Length: 528
Image 1 (cartoon, rainbow, N blue to C red):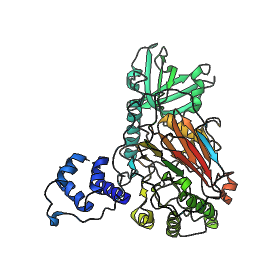
Image 2: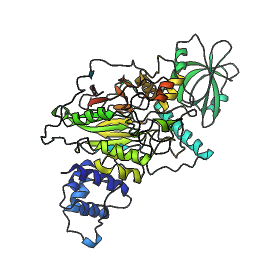
Image 3: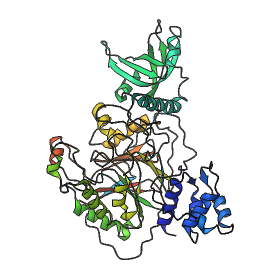
Image 4: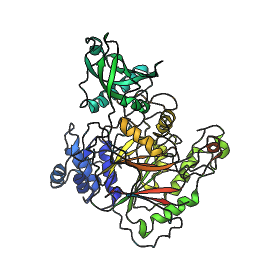
């Protein structure tokens, strides 16, 4: 059955507010008239139901044909995603420390693909399944920037991350700790409100929860003192320690991050299938590497790339306009809509039977504040030729049972600026990604260059551990595994600009990380 039919059914159900079992979508797509069948199933489903089941579809399809006048012929057009991915039942939400894995025999760089052969003309055997998407802000944003909405966002952040830390400590609120007797053992979960060094070289950290603030002291001679280097403002941590005699401060014995549990085991596909992870295409820039892109697209048509059924693009489809000073001098295409028209033409070179998922970045024509909604209808129409799935930044995309957290990566600038070079650097961007996984939040520090849109919930919290974490933004290639989570920053398709020369950015260009979804091993193809 056509993939497009399944994709449109999923989107149409989402537009009507329904989730659906995969088998239910398959049954609807296989109907003689999928549009009429979908309308009939929706009409037969209770208004308060949230999920369309395969059983209800069979019952409806086996019932007498509905009155044609009652069948909607509305063409599904919304890209709003549905469905929650099925996660590995062995995965735990308990935070834990575990050595980081980087590189290893599971990864390889293939530089022999710089001159890929053209398509053989044989019929493709690709059969990708529609991606399931969660965590998308598109169509759900309610923030207006008022102070109270920021309070709501940070309160939601605290409550959700404190649940991940709840198994590590017997938390008491700040107000209760203030009333405890001096010398008592105490445990607290809070957002980091302030970090400063004392005259003696110790670390004073102010933690905040929903009841107030409380100061805790990490002594410089304690083993946990080096963990302070990993801290960012506004992230959520837990501490254990002993109160001073006057109960005015806690001396910290243990410090915990929400983290990825040591028991985490990623899900994998049950067949050999691959996904290409790319980002930062920057069409419209004078430095966009069109020839390299064409080699990549040609390679996707070859027999060697037959198993590559998914293309995931983590933001910055185009160069944009007015993103940085004097950018207009470096533009090949000066109109933002013309840039997206050109990007759409380049996307047409990709095999038509590939499932494509795209999120926006900071150069794209969406709001800069995160979470970013997916492209508006005008831009979706421009990029409609390939029927790509368009979702917000960040979003979790589940393909073949493998969950991939896609985040463009603006917060990586903040992480790299604030943390020691051995913990986070532009040369090894995946290590900065490890910090986000440890903190279970894609943009923990508010302020600086990181813009936050206040919402009724914090869409930037990493509730469920992803099997793969995919980012871009910094134009550097880096990958490795953190607690079994494959973390990939996929480089870019734009050669060094004059602006990048001024800020000392030497980009890694025209690389395409290819992930085996059945093993989570990875090969990097180079097309420059």
